[in-house]
View 1 (cartoon, rainbow over the protein chains, first blue to last red):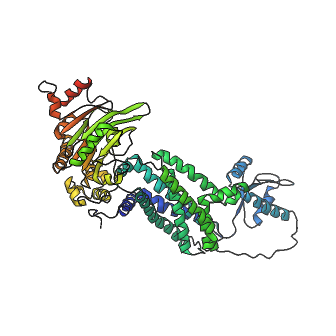
View 2: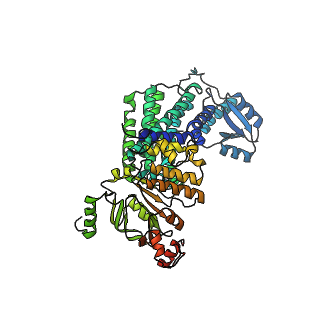
View 3: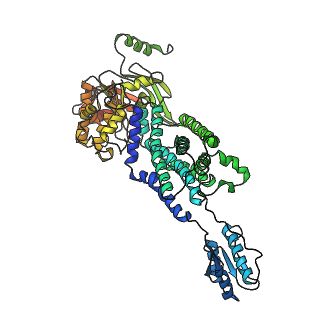
Length: 348
Length: 261
């Protein structure tokens, strides 16, 4: 046995040191564990309602506005707001109403056709007013209402949040810790010991995996038992995909932090790396909205790969074969980033 | 190796008879852009002595000591520590050295004991963690976070981290800058104790009284060159006037005051 004077192996001591620093920083715990749960809770409040959503329309004064109001109110799901002309445009712009009706003959519909809820409102308003004007329905369709588990927006957004969180805490935890230690000349002090650099990096990774268990666990438990989000695939595969994602973002964080001397500098680079992925990788809305030519690029991003894989497992119940492509992308990012980070890494 | 004349043969000969000197460097040069930090510096620190590099801020003391510590490559010149060279023997050498850097801030969230344990874990030999805590008299603070320590206590912890492997050579870069008189004396006592057990100390300082209190020999550095080297007493005696100090030696040698920035 090596004489270490009562201390453990350096990897263990370095990992313990990192964990202690983290646990003794109450804010860090908040950002890693509570913040994502709070965000999920807020989204759950906003998007976990089922049933038919209401359609809000504005009505401005004009000839026969009382009859128009009556016709609109008789249609199911329409909510009418009486507005002045100026207020109507403002309400339209702010999304408080999806469409504004101007009474007259014929009546006018004012709306932005690029907005989905406005197009829906146009159909609903038109049907109500045409009927009031005497149009007859040729048939009454048979309505089959279903609620498919896992089809709510909140079910779809939870894997996105999970991915976003793994990216954020992974990059910050590593990048911040490394640059902080560098700016305080602690890295230089460590480089003056016989400490192995591989041990240092390994310990940062190990500590990261402990936090990962915390954050993924907290968010998944909350999603499953409070928001009632179904998890179709195996939890082991969810854990494995999360782990792979965490490794790739730890690598990316290490790369971003490999040369920065100050917290300000590294913060800028972190945002430069992460913000595009928040937008492109389908956290809150599907990345299919972006033009086709950009899709290969978007699919090669680590966050896209992670979120796609998480959705495949959690929503579609995919097995390992179903996420092998994403796993390969994440593995490639991990290896590439660490290799490059080790070459560029600055100890002082 | 063979192109390097005379000096080198002397050292090789010394190798065979007695253990090599703690630190030797020859013809050290280092520049940062236009600024020459070290300008052809030769130095030998003997085993078991406490050697002080004395000079004003910006004289090149820190650059010199960091080159000797293997943290920075020189532009030109040779360095041997304990007869070994940086590069080939870096790992083995690090096991035998104790290094304290200027302005290192240890992690504030860790306790004294945890910090010492961490540093101790990197070395294959040395006192136990408990013994190190006792050595720097931080027993009553062992469970305190580093962030809560006074300046003097922090500096003692910093020295403790350099002593965890019972080093053969201890390097200290301005160990007492910014400390109150009591803390400075406390630190000097630790250094003298280390030297009395056969350890070698190389420190930089810009305090006269520190050099006179703990150093067996001092080298006066100015503008990247060593301009005088001897025991403090001999340097003062060399002035030939009674009641003089090292400060006067420095002024006599350079025409400037030691603490000029």
